[in-house]
Image 1 (cartoon, rainbow, N blue to C red):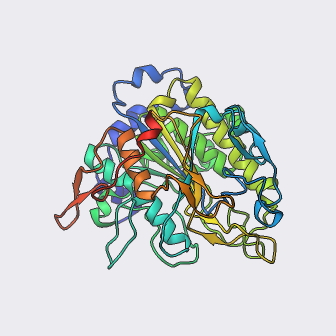
Image 2: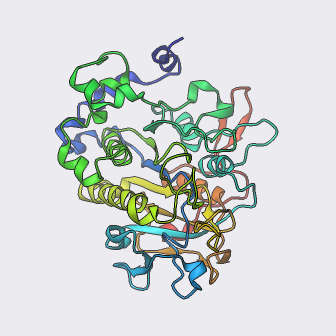
Length: 398
């Protein structure tokens, strides 16, 4: 069975997808005509694959020793009293649009795959049980089109375990749709290759061949293109889109700054990775706000863990699960907030520790679904969206 037939068997709502698809290249002036079809909040979940350092991004410690604070200055934002790393000058001017969570933590293994599982499903995989990606569970519950992953699923990150990007125990019929490289390529669109073959290829929101100005604002790179496509797709009625900033941590520049090959040096944060995220995420927030869609679109950007408070002997930072930061914007979240406070070295939560499952519950709240709601697994069992006793981060919506 080929990929096309598989997704048809999986229950992809082709008619809905294509009817919304007319929006893409015409820009976003027709959004109001689609408002009836988009009854709830959309979600754009951005995986900052590699595990960004909290100290060098959104929880700088300018008064810590140099071996802790790292090479980057803390700069003020447009929210009084909130500082972030100098690698994000554009986001510093938009801090009123997003909230920073500074005390994420977990006590599991400090490997990428485990963190990916926890952040995207709200659970660790144990005893062979594979929890579903939250977007798959919500799509199943709401009966909407399958989630989309851009530009492709996460690959090897060293743990040889699932990353939590599929439907797991819900079964393959609930898996996300991941457009192929050919379906996303500009040349394929220009040549009309496969235009009638799949819902994704037929959907103009994926076509960026006439989006020069927008691509420039988002950065004209793979990550920027994916964020732009996520904006177009949600405008066209798609409810859940996952964007993977990177798909591996090996032999390329990522957030995984161990300091020596095959990983990245800490200088990559200021030279490439930081500016790439700064530009694309800022453009995404700007577009959603300008189009009046930010309140109806929850945007999350999260790594799978943080980095060690002390810089290691080769000038990098290693894996650290005791404390890290993420961003949330839109979807009813009040921007300009900082939730949680870490200790003087960014090593552990000092006030308001946050478990990743609470983030999953928060996503549920934003889309108007109870975290206690259940979906049926492939073997007929009822599965809660979020484990019992876990509450959303209510302060975000105050």
